Length: 532
Image (cartoon, rainbow, N blue to C red; front, side):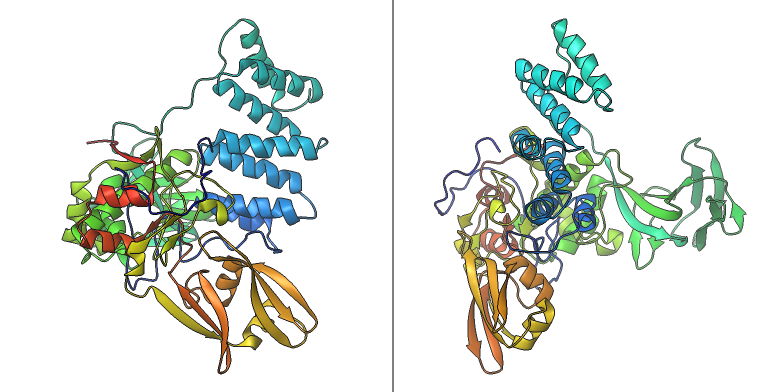
């Protein structure tokens, strides 16, 4: 990205007025897009599939998806051009990084001149140039697209833009900042791919036609409402076919609806998608946060820590919503996004933190930041480019003395050699694990697994995930030997990028307010109030 992290020197960052938050002690969930681990594909030789990479993109795990597609480019026997095009699209559309997108679109044009994705790359590069005010280069790219790909679906639009350029008009507008002035509703995917759902409302319950607005049914409080998929692909209420593919179910204000193990605020929307039912909880941002913050951080933590968690959770979900306007939902209720347990999780202490930061988000320039975080950095926050091949300026590597004093920073794990050999298909007698490459923070980027019949390289992240991410808590470790096998001794928990939750807790205990905590972990960011 422009103004990226050229200075590789590790240092404690100055406390800037900034943005967001952290997580929890013994909880095994780790919040907003972060999971317990990073995406397991790095610079080592690994098998990645397009399905896996696409699944990461669908979940909104954009940094992990970039790394997966670039791994496919580096190591894939086929479809390498498609992998580059996908990586460019993520930089362009989801990360607001046109320079990163240009790099990958340009590599596609240079390396694969006959690619079926060449017209897309030319068009996207032209739009980037025009949006940046570089009219001459944008015009050249559009003309090349029209000349070389007359039958492309992009060509009619390219001709239209070229005509406007000839008249001296600007064919594209600058990208708008991702900030509005009102609280929006978040679409949380509670269920996908089922044939029936059962809801239990705590008050009178009404079902509406989402399109026409007509009320289809009214039920009494406490009624178990079963909705199912009919043979003709519509929704049935009990035994009554509603004749619709989408219905909205609501109670009165502040009345909860139970689904599964949890109670939820807001509205339920049931739709038929790909021949199955999909249940969405439509809930205002601040109400959504009431179910997220205590699910991602103990409500017993200091108030400034809870405020920071509220800000980071709000920023994350609004970032996702801004990128998924054409999708069927914004976020998952699990560690695929942020853990959301609805009203069942609510606590007065976290409610206060949410109310005290209402509408506040983390910004980088005029755009929302993508606020990744993890449990414990082990004393060294990792740079995102050393994990996922991205380069967001505010996800920088830095020394983190606050996390060194946190509970559970150090860990060890006894690993049996046969476990490694079996898990990774090593032939012969297993001999050792050596760390082939380390990141600037000291994490094991690439491991070499050696047996008497050969060796295999694998990313530290993939190794951790395949063996046991709950016991191999990070890739910041050393390998030794002990009775019965290999001994891994390490520090920290999680991928190490962004805010360290335990470090943030320690900062709050030392008296730092939430804005300074966030400024430390997200250098170069600022806070803004998106709505009142």
